[in-house]
Amino acid sequence: MGVKEELKLFFSAGAFVLALLSVALSIRIASVKTAPSSGQTILIESEPIVDPAKAAEIRAREKKEEFDRMEEEALKKKREWAQRALDELNKRYDGKIPDTLILATKMEIPRPFGDESKEKLMVEPLPVMVDIKNKRIEFLALFHQSTRQGGIVEVMLSTTIGALDHRAYEAISVTRINPHDLWLALLLLGLQPAKGVYKEGEQIELVGDKVDVIFHWLNIDGTPKSAYAEDFIYCMETHKTADRSGWVFVGSRVGFDPIENREVLGTEKLGDIILVWHHPAAILDLPSKEGGKSDYFIYNSQLLPYPASCIHNFCPLNFFWAEDDGFSLISVLTKVVITPHKDKK
Image 1 (cartoon, one colour):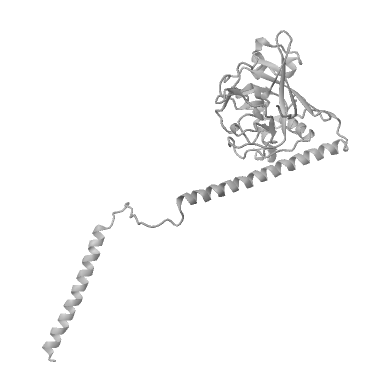
Image 2 (tube, helix red, strand yellow; image 1 turned 30 degrees about the horizontal axis):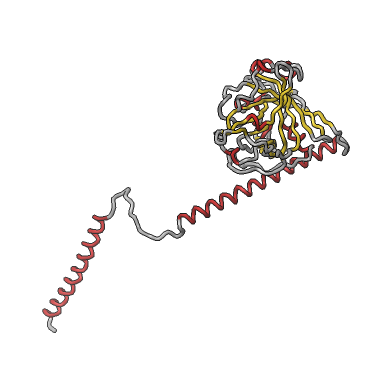
């Protein structure tokens, strides 16, 4: 092959290579032009690794298992506290706890705003009487004409001592006992704290040791009146008062108080004693799952006594209530009696 033929073949091969490069470059440029601009999303069709419905089912099961675990831990802590309290009481009385006890443990309350004193401010609560032999608890409380009377009810009984009164405005009744004293009295009746809700408003049925709560008061003519706690709450769906099914001793959640740097019962900080709406801080809670509905029950205004219809003679009112509590002039004194639950036929 001569030189001319070799050069011709070389240039022909080169032209072919250049043509290929040109085609490749054209394809690249075209792809750049059709590529999405910044901020656009390329949708790539693919089959999901897990069916969405199955994934939701797995997540719900994992969440429930986690809640169950936390509830079991909370129950274990409550029962440890209960046993420790009973052990301490037995030790105090050398293993011979009297048949009748009066519990009135002083409570520390926050000092008034601007008071920089380091000294603890202690108050004397109302006494809680526990008759261990006859399994009966008694203490004093007040009905009051709540601004929410006739409306939705979430609280049956709350304390009003110190900063623990944030639920008193929506309670059917209020008291000045130390919630811890009632908790201990229920333990002395032989009751065991049960599993409560882990978060407020859970729509679950509560199971455990139950008690009956009965309110006693006097009419203006001196005739005695009494009613079960359930009689004061009216169901808007059934158009009846709540069933007399008793109140579950959930025993109140134990939690850590960063201010006092110690563990405390939730009821000691929140004042929740007897709750209609499920709450982890409650001592006694409504057993039915409807207790998880905040708009299910309203006050039974026909039963809730008015101040003009009753007299206060269980004890001097000034012993029971401070004048600046705001409830004395709009309240009716009542005695609260708690006994182990008896099924109503």
